[in-house]
Length: 609
Figure (cartoon, one colour):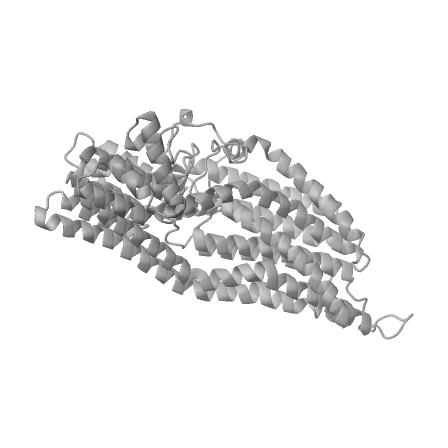
């Protein structure tokens, strides 16, 4: 559903896109756009109409106020302006560089024009992937409410209200549309998402059917709903893990191993007469190869069927970094880069060129790791709270089923549940006792035990306990059943990550250690090879000058750092989805590790060659 313009501030990128769109007359250029109702060959085609419809749907899912034709016109205008700028720079560049600069400008312009449609589609696909990770939990909340009261309308409303994210918002929208009709909104919700997750539609239909099932069959129908979404998620992730191994192996071989192996022969190739220049080296290793890796990584990520969403840390969290103080991270990064360059320059065994890749790594890695570390610590605490959540839910549900009040059951369970989960229960019991509030406010209120714990699973359990507080003893058995479902969900998440562990582990290790190790060693070997390829002191090589080690070292160093960033982001996205905070933190550490390993490998290999 597209928001109205008054519902949120207009983003900066939307302002830029709208301004660029005004410079382009229509959306016909580059084969997309035009009047989709006209006959083929007169101004539009069925394919272009479908493309615009898909783009409109992606923009609506992203809550953008822009329409598809505006984005297309902006992409066309941006592509043409970029190509013209590249040609202008080529005219001003030195003669040997003019062809490369012109080709780069034209390629960049074409890329921007193509991204006008693919970009929003890819971003929307990534967000849908993250949203669908909460599908099992959403179905579980609806099932739980149905076990307490077999009314599909209330079950759907509870599942939407007690959740967060695009999936819960979508269900809430369908519930509002069904208000005043015989429908609950569950069937329409499942139908809307069936293109991206067919098991979700089946589970939603089963939950709705359980409302009309006889009491003896209702429990089995609800069990089938939870099994449908859990097994569906498990099977889809297993299929994705099997299908992704081949492409990632090819990406690893042709994007990492082969380019690193060719580094050692570049100086010898130059001496043998092969025309390998520094601009060509930079273009291939620092532009073409990283660009190809980004494209291949995006192709893999948009095909991920689901990603279990991480705890969402709002900017209002007391321990979260202040977004208005990002400039401090930028300044800190620049200072770290300058300090690192000075420190490296003062080390006698390191040549002067080594300060450039290390300074770049510090300027990028230090602020990323420092800025996102508080968010990581908040999430670590949130996951620690979730660690023993099933035990807590089981113990409380069993006592409620025996007739004890929820308030007393929470206080009793606090002494039996270990870790930070038990501490949260104890905090909630203390809030109840001191403030005389209900179960929901004790957990989720302004001073509640979970007020600053952004864990959707824990908050859903708190909502469940609030329902149990209202319903009393009849909610005991459903709470125990919900504990089993929560435990099953955690098993699905563990299995999904285990299926991808081999692939993601290889990518992470390559990014942080293996690639910089091989890169540093091959640059040192190339330096030795170039020195030995001269005929003798005071003479020139047989065919040409060897490639300068400084240029080679900087180019390969930049390639190693880009590999660290791209492969780490890809591994994190495959494992947990494109979570900005986790990707930023891991990329920062990987870049720093890659720079240190690169220098150490260069020095160590230089001592033995």
